[in-house]
Figure 1 (tube, rainbow, N blue to C red):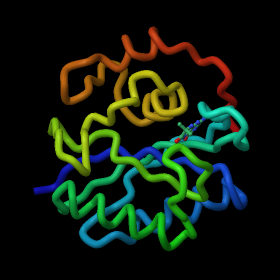
Figure 2 (figure 1 turned 90 degrees about the vertical axis):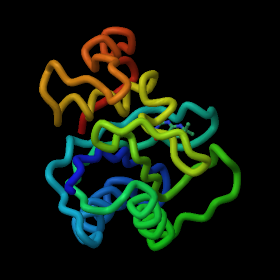
Figure 3 (figure 1 turned 30 degrees about the horizontal axis):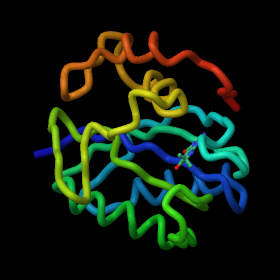
Figure 4 (figure 1 turned 135 degrees about the vertical axis):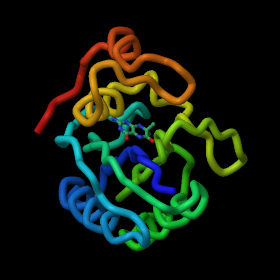
Length: 159
Ligand code: ROI
């Protein structure tokens, strides 16, 4: 079975734009997985004060992997691109989050889908909106158009 998954990409260290470009290539090379589309790149201030600005994007993948195997593959890409986990919300060379995994709702210790914070993050919602139809709904039924209405395009710059 093939599942359409949406991945949030973020970086605020070591040439973020290059980090995201490499990550998109790496996503296309994950086993049993194909990169279907990528949004434009967006920059915004960090939600945690005192960090460099972030560059973010969203990618659509088709994958035959189950969700936790995809998560393992994403963490391998993060590690490969020099991610060092220090503080929880600290700056990072690369952050890859599974935002949506088909129509699945998952609440597991390692993986909650739809991603818990995505509804409040313009740097996730606006790039996602580039990749899906206007009437798109998250797996839990929330309409993307409503989330966008509630989350103004503030502080976001499309490169
Ligand atoms: N802020 C922005 N703008 N983009 C991110 O990807 C991001 N990621 C984070 C925190 C520190 C919450 N802030 C962010 O983890």
